[in-house]
Structures are given as C-alpha cells and as structure tokens.
Image: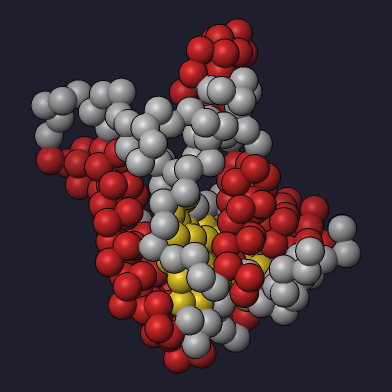
Length: 252
C-alpha cells in the first residue's frame, strides 16, 4: 500500500531510543523527510547514519532538551530551517515517574511538565503552520490509564488524552488530525532497563498479562504511527488507540 508520504516532513521527539527510533526508520523508508530530536546527540547521529545507509534521506539531527526554557520555539525554528515546513509531529519524548503517594510538588511539577506541558507547548508551536497549509498530523505517544500505583506520568498522559480530543475538534476542519497512542509493553530502553530488567520476569509478566504472549517491538507502534501520519488516515482524529497486545482489560 502506498501511504502517500513521499516528501512529507516529520519531526519525531524522543528519537534516540525505542518507539521514536523505530518510527524514524519507518517514516524515512516511506520517503518522509525526517527530523529526529532528543538530548543524546551521539545516538541521534548513529541513527541518522543508519537511515542514510539504507538509501533514504539522512534525517536532520536536533540535539535539544524539551524541558529547557523556550525549547518549543527554538525547536520550531530549527525544524523550519531544516525542513521548510512541518506536516507530521510525533510526540514520543517522555518518561514514567512513579512516586510515593505523598510526594511533594516538585516531583509533580517535573513529571507534568515533561509528559504534558512541554508536549502541549511544542504542538502549539506547529499547529498554526499546519492549519495554514491545510495538512497536519499530530501523534502523541501516551501511556496506560490503568495505573498500578501513583505515577505522575499516568496523570499527565490522561491530560494529554483530554487535551488532544478537545483540540482535534477545533482543528479538524483544517485538515489537521490529532491522535494518542498508549503503548503496552514495548521493548524499549525504559522497559528493558527500568521496568522489566529481568528476562525471566518479562516472560512471566507477558504470560500472565498480555494475551498476545510477548512484549512488542518499537516497530509495532511505528507502523500504526506511520499510517496515522498519512493522508489515508484523514478521517481518524481525536482517538486513543492502544497498542498493547490486548493487555488493556477494559472495553472502553
């Protein structure tokens, strides 16, 4: 299937590892002109070289920290300089923030800023351009709505879902779609080193909790992201689509 993405421009945050990295590879293979963003420039350069070696256009490398003051505007300007415009924004930066139930305000502020507020600000930096060109795709990588304990990221991602739904109703008439994808257990740096570092424990968890029976790969997310970024997905917006091998227990 031709996804009609050749020549489209795409920014992927959190692209040094995991879902962002896998998505960058797929987008580039589909003919997108890609900008990849994260803090670790060495990993971004390596990814860019790997993509270029396949014959695809080498991605623009943006080594930026989304938490820095004024980062959304700086990133927007660098993306426009490198790509000319932006058609697709994949918000993949973020991280789990488990905390004690009585943690102080600082922990909440940091986690909400990373997982909601900076995502919102970065998106808003590009929305005017997307509306003006009558094409835009925003795909947010979010998280579980079934918290196992107190985790700032759960609250932040729930806020993303509600905000994205509201914004999708405002910009839908301008050819801009906004969707959110909560991943299940995907083999990424965070999952493999922090959440489930023990291979035997991963196998037991998958058997007990995931109907598909295994942890997913970044490309399992990237394939859906790439479709949602395409013109073929023009009638899908405001949705929350789980990619988790059936792990979510609720029907809605």
